Image (cartoon, rainbow, N blue to C red):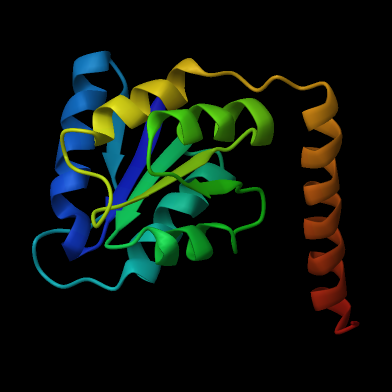
Length: 155
């Protein structure tokens, strides 16, 4: 499985730990940017989220200081369901209940040691469907409506 990975400068250590863990697990981690030098998180997060939306990668893991900024960016990309998580339980639920395809973490709350454990829980969980499928469908309908309204300049 190809996994897009990106971070800003504040979460570079998280990204490094995640890329290492992905390789150890047999995943192909694709680095969409971010180093120890200043980088604008919308650039790298947007590229990683678009890779998922365009089918270049199956999923993405993106990080910044709080995780909030990258989650906002990712959720602007049509077809992406990004979740900001701080622990393995939240990661598991984001897959089971929301069919999340982009995992977001913040280096202010998640350590490089904990990030692989969170990612492991996320990859181990499957979407449960059932009552959750209706809700995910409602999200997709809202997204399609907004895209259609934007194309015609309607409110």
